[in-house]
Amino acid sequence: MINIIVNDTPRLFKATITLQEIISELGISVNGIAVAVNENIIVKTVWNTTTLQQNDEVLVIRATQGG
Image (cartoon, rainbow, N blue to C red; front, side, top):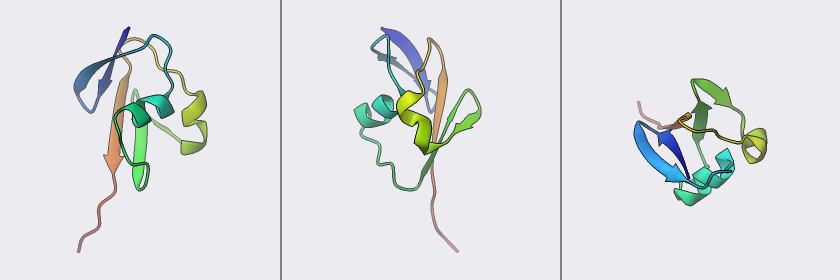
């Protein structure tokens, strides 16, 4: 198991996990979100190939609308 920090909350995941798998495991809807790993924006097209490491920090930002 490895520790990944998701939106400032430490979570344990299997040793080899992709960004897409984390998003799926957490039940996060992919519509209208942006994701950064260690303060670097990761484009959606590479979520399946972005493998996370021990203590990586993932930030999921949801777009909102307002006026």
